[in-house]
Image (cartoon, rainbow, N blue to C red; front, top):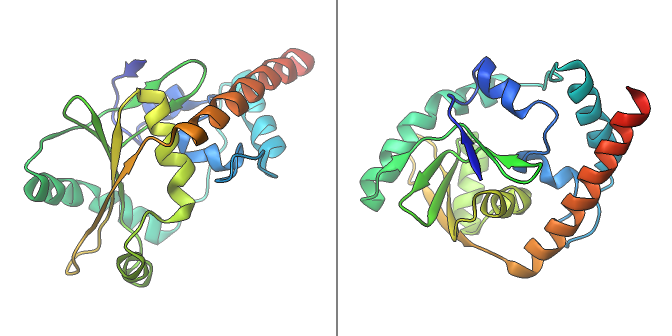
Length: 196
């Protein structure tokens, strides 16, 4: 794994991820059950276009998403206070043709992934008290890209208690993810060669 040292969200970070399958979009490659995603081709074509043009496609960001980005530092500080661990921020972790942007590295074995959803969504997460299924592929992908043992998923909303769930490696899923990523990256190279 190679760490590309940049601040997440900056033009350098966006350029580092351009055309590269990233853990935050692994749900577009594979389902939580280990099957190919129906969004796979659309994501494949997007990355092929990004690779050739060198221009990342803009993704939609609403005000709630922007607020979440702004609250991330506050959430990270609270995590450090609760856990007693310091968090090292990272840019983009590049593995074998794919990558991940965890919100931090914890010690030698862990990662941190922070979400700052709306109040209603956060309350729902607190009641469920488990990793929200929509982040399963992302957290497992982060573990695959970095070789780490666990990722602490944190949901944060000011004034409410945080949710911190430790997610460990799911080796059965990671095996399926490796296979799907190899196929996807191979297809990506083929598509790029055809349309160049």
